[in-house]
Amino acid sequence: MQIKISNIKIPVGQQRQLRQRVLQLYPIAEQDIEEFKILRESIDARKKDHIFYLYQVYIKLKEKREDLLKHDNVSLYQAPEPISYPQWKEELPPVVVGFGPAGMFAALYLARCGAKPVIIERGSRIEKRKEEVAEFLQHKKLNPNSNVQFGEGGAGTFSDGKLSTNINDRYISFILEEFYKHGATEDVCYAANPHVGTDYLEKVVRNIREEIISLGGEFHFNTTFEDFSQEGEIIRIKCHNGFSVSSKHVLLCLGHSARDTIKHLYAKGLRMKAKPFSMGVRIEHLQSDINRMQYGKSAKLLPAASYRGVVHLKDRSVYTFCMCPGGVVMASASEDGTIVTNGMSEKKRNKANANSALLVGINPEDYYQSSPLDGLDYQEKYEKLAFEVSRDYRAPANLVGEFLQGKIAKGHRKVKPSYPHGVVYCDLGRCLPAYAVKALREAIPLFDRKLRGFNDADAVMTGIESRSSSPVRILRDEGRQSNIPGLYPVGEGAGYAGGIVSAALDGLKTAMEIVENRKLKVDN
Image 1 (cartoon, rainbow, N blue to C red):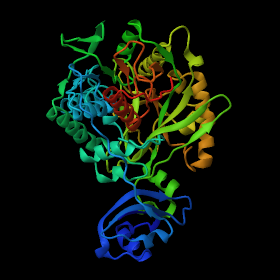
Image 2 (tube, rainbow, N blue to C red; image 1 turned 90 degrees about the horizontal axis):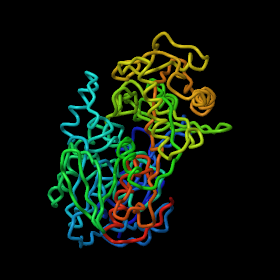
Image 3 (cartoon, rainbow, N blue to C red; image 1 turned 90 degrees about the vertical axis):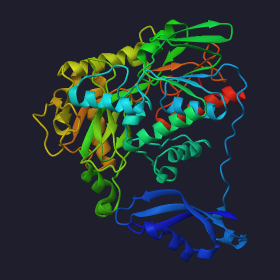
Image 4 (cartoon, rainbow, N blue to C red; image 1 turned 180 degrees about the horizontal axis):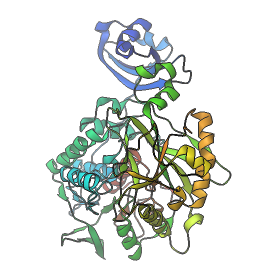
């Protein structure tokens, strides 16, 4: 008999006594248990003087115990429906362009169906990519095709590796389990806000690649998609290094930074439309201050605290995104002469600062002139302006105190900027639209009403964060194909995802659609 027990409260510091606590609360003996595992773990910190862990657990009992179902919070456990892997029936293998989260899970599913997918990735395999990223961080030598944005694992590989999402979908548990099976720690399967950590993501990405290869998949790294031609149902992909491949099914898992490829696809006739995106800064506080803000006196007994918030102003919203406890602000440019920031944390989240994107909503009417690609140029314009502040990859920055007063800080105070190339204190209006600066000034004091200490005068604002999502959507039908049959726009670069899990989910479902030929309703 399999049961689920919910709403189990455990005092802070007593998490290891969870199993014992369950046996105390319910008439279950240790010898009755065949299997015990955590289904969900969260922290209830709504009352700072009474913080506790909240658990949901799974128990497999050796015998039927219908009497337990009469107790509060006990119910029968129903396992998620397992994924099936129908046999691939096409003669030509599918082609996956890009090996970020969308490409990884699309290729993994296709490989398990016996499709032997061909994967094209413009960047390097993860081992070499790490060296290339380190070269940029240490010596400012950027490889435009293999960097924090491009390469095996996608942009999420050099991030916090957050696996949280607002999407409610039955396949999410499958995605979390696959991360665990391929090298993440087990808590990603049950934590309320799971994260892999950039130090574990390398192993996960490598292990997924190795499984795909073991099933007949074929990888081509440092191979940039350049063009395609079509003859009947057959699409022929051509790459910059002379490699070419033909298929009836090409999954375009490009990532949101593949501007050159997106522009070429538009020129080739793929239908696209402009969509909202966001721009702003990375805001850094001391992690110890965030811990006190969220946990009060219990802070020392709890893991690094996070936060999330949104402020709705008269004409647009300002919100936090990709908050990285105990992390650093990353130099994430993929093009020479631009500044792009992102956040990154290791599994332990033990660095001095907490950082989060603080983003202002950008609407098509803010930038649209004549083309759905105008948002790409709008992004690039401000990334180049950010570079012009220093012209040597130091990022534009200011302190919250001075920013709110319309002044420029002379240097950091208690919060030392973690951006690896250093910062230049300046007017952030030099690299952000005036309406974005105005919105940030209005929003920060309002955030402080919910998160006391958020408007700390010493907090650092580093610009610019511009790649949280794509400003373009490549349109697709209910079968997930573009207007050119056989081309499937997938994930963040196509405008259908906004994070690791949502991109992985989009890749998985697109692969399932191709294999099973199911019609999944998609909002264009």
